[in-house]
Length: 335
Image (cartoon, rainbow, N blue to C red; front, side, top):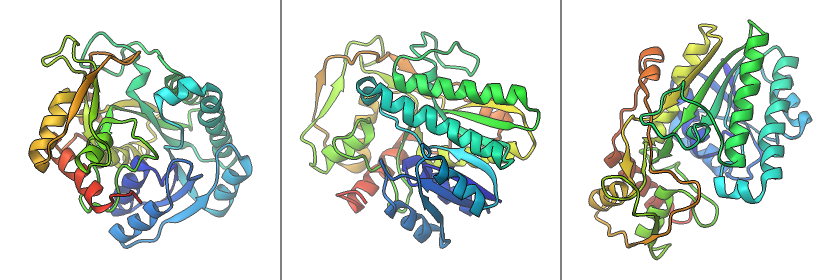
């Protein structure tokens, strides 16, 4: 089975390619490399010993998408491609709507034109907005606090409407919590451009002395240590969730929505202290003011994925911290 993986050269995409290949699927990648590098695909080939078909293309260009469907016998799509920084989306909302929303509409149109009726969509826990109740279940109210979150909600709505209109169309929407870590080989991992926006790559750069210290935004939340609590999940566990979702699509499942998380909330200080202990590295940090829009706690109820997909997270926080730093050490300047 040839699976089209949009954004497959990215952080989550590259790890998912490894698990797809090892599960016997044949991924085909389209990526415009705006936030990734082709080197990640070469490293996937090194890990798996299998070639990866790659198209350097942009979903905003319908010709790029159609050429892939014309040349390959695609049976399903895993849709990762999209801009993903919350703060950046507030600054550049038009670019986010053009890239994420318009690109997805082009993809869905190409799927219809080529009679491809199965998609896994990479959504996010941001669609729950500032939920006041944890753990978060799939049927909780949805809202968006940023243009990035709005694009995810819009795309979910498109997919839901297509499923309602067509009995032949099958979709699995996966709402990720906070992926961190890297492949155990250290060959692929999170490689942000410029100063990292996310916690773990910032910690690894502080440990490697690429950054002087970590700023922790807020130490006065109503949590055990005053810092924000999130559901951190190993990126390999997340990748395996997509393999499980593909198997669900084979059942012609209609529309299914699942949280992918561990179901455990860790504070920022939990992550910092675990990282320091596991890797024997001191992480200097300072407390800064809360960021606008941040909430105290956000972690998943992942029981539906456990019962319906037969999937659950296997890796703990220590492994996430160890694997993340292993990638940083082996790739001090990224790919």
